Amino acid sequence: MQVRAIDIANLLGGTVEGDENILVAKPAKIEEGEPGAISFFANSKYEEYVYTCKSSVILVANAFKPKQPVEATLVRVADVYSSLSILLEHFSEYSKKAPSGISAQAVIDSSANIGENTTVEALAYIGKNVILGKNVTVYPQAYIGDNVVIGDGSIIYAGVKIYKDTQIGQQCIIHAGAVLGSDGFGFAPQSDGSFKKIPQLGYVEIGNDVEIGANCTIDRATMDKTVIGDGVKIDNLVHIAHNVFIDKNTVMAAQVGIAGSTYIGKNCMLGGQAGLVGHLKIADGVKIQAQSGVGKSVKVPEAAIQGSPAIDYAKASRMYAVMRNLPELYKRINDLEKRVKQKDKNA
Image (cartoon, rainbow, N blue to C red; front, side):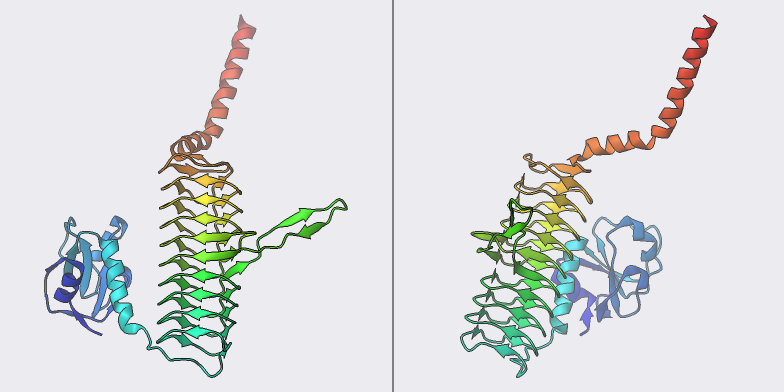
């Protein structure tokens, strides 16, 4: 597929500086641009590449003022990152393979209901009473247990395991190796020191437009349901325990761990390796920095916290600044003590 610069600008609501009719066929990183590609510039750290990039077109912000001549045609837009998302989606529409139907090597129970234009590839397993909506894609070796519901347009990548009763909304993407609906970590300590398993009778509910990264695990509820709200984006290697509720449009980076029965509000951001203990309530818009250990609820919306135990981000930054100077402060205190002692001797 080749697209003119002017067509890209029209798609993104932008303007063109340079050759409106120059053609591009693919996106490329600005450091590795080449003729026939489109690159983007959104971070000032990469400005040097704008002047050396070989791409035919570069996507830039309206406010960008070049300090040197730029060979490439520029497409100016209000928000580069948002425009990039639209542009890449546009390119991906042309690269998507056509539905290939139901493989003869897939195992599908006769009670399953398969929607129009849905693809089920080789060695996938579809259990009893499963409902797959329209335009769903199930890749090889995926396991979909009994009574699972998957909404229109969702993609289930290879090796995904979806336990019984799980409900998945429309336009979701579940990446390879993810496990949805596994048992929560529930055990009752016994008098002899052993642990008795507590049956996990609930299920997992995934909203619309959710993306779940590779090798994530989302546990079924002990009772009722574990909920992932609409628009939530989960990176690879995240664990979400039983009865957790994650509200709309929250995002979390890799290796986050959330213990049972914790509620996370709308539009929160969790950095990589953040850990949350159980039974917490996190207000809307809270930002949890990477590797933070959260041991108590955060009640203030839009708060930013950091550290282990996690505290207010600004306070944590000030504490870190002091901590970095501890060797020098320690030396100064020692010097002062020596002077005081010497003064006492001379008194």
